[in-house]
Length: 367
Image (cartoon, rainbow, N blue to C red; front, side, top):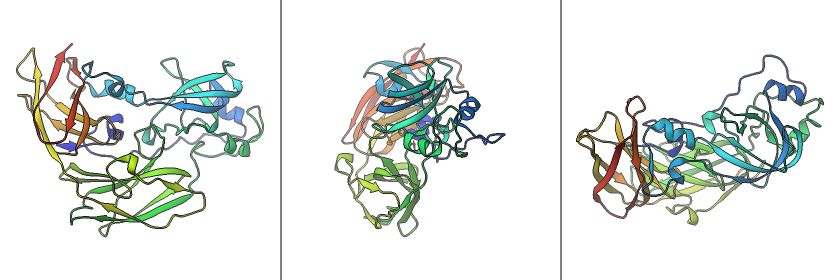
């Protein structure tokens, strides 16, 4: 069995956790001196100033009801999960439709260069038409906080701007350090510290660090805001700890940490309690054939913790087992490798893990 974060699921359903925080924008071939040149360079179909009213998570698995038939192919799930719809009140429009409200999409962040919009804040947006006919933006398009944009340029009609390689990426302001205190000797083996901004809809964490052998850690290049700090630990690739600072499993009980420009918070002591885990086993059935196609996996994704998920390979007989699952409510689905020619679907199921489960039945449906 292998564990994976939703961030990894969104970026391709890889089998191991990966760093997904880096984004590199292509450098312009010639200097950019005005915002109109920036708009032309990035083929901006719409330029406007707007206030963010809502950010959503467009994700087929989350939106489906229990029992609904959904695709099993990883890329089908990924196409929907990799989009964040954003609704903005238009304060001033420079190019494109003169509307009072605008809706566009961006990626969840990290390696896909999605822009991190915050509800209530104002931005100057450079958006382009997506293949699906909707507007989209990212950190490389020039979109940025309105306050920052006005410091660098007067308006998008020709005044000078300050050339930057990654327009829209906030300037690093602070760092956060501390020490993990586990309750046993294995508590910090193969572990990560994740930083997640409060209110952020994207399942991609804002930052991460691996604790040293003595449990100490430092997160750097942090932007202002309020965050939750999360400790995750794997032993033999099975997630066995999922704890919010100062040492709780429920995010509603977590202590928010505020990052203030120019201020470094005091070092934290992050207590990691022992957490019980349970086994979940069952069978994937295929009504058309007693044997399953190749590369079938079962996925358990937490219904309330967007960074908590497990995957397990299913045998050709359909049998599967998860050896160490943290308690909670999960969605269970079946996935099939996209290289398999036949088209398959599955039904979204709910699993409440409060003890060992031995007869979980999931369905693989031939289209």
